[in-house]
Image (tube, rainbow, N blue to C red; front, side, top):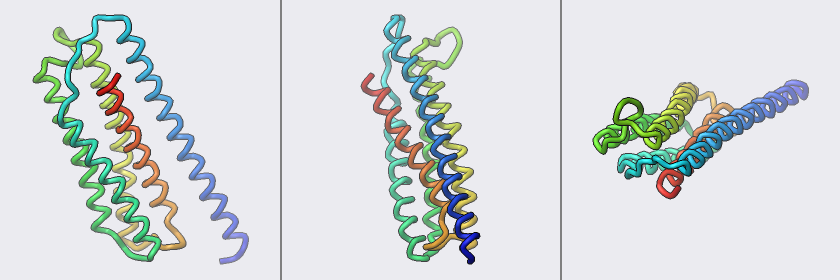
Length: 189
């Protein structure tokens, strides 16, 4: 590789990393706005109190485990290993996260907490909208993980080249931290 090509690769890596952080910042602001609106609206009254679904505890554990697994996978890639089965495990854990979220919504409806309609309350609607928005961003993360898994399978990542993996993993870690924030927010605010 010549010097000009190496400089272009470094610039590309910096640009892609900056774009990721801009996206993460935008998503963070979006959720900050939603949780701020939640607090303001709660103070106005007519607020239904309910328990956060138990399935959300399981989804929290699953996303933390998947993030830890990505840290392990990165060390394997840096050692020029091909951790394809571990990548599949992360995708499966991401799917389990989504399943637990859907089960959590079912638990909410069994408590009489609905998104819309005659029996709905703004408190429940906020919870549904915020968790659905997080799940939508998680699906984007799953798509990125599938692409990364294909590249891991094709052995495109190694100790000197793992930018794509790193970008997807950082986004996934962000989603995990964001979910942990939301989970604690709903339990303690």
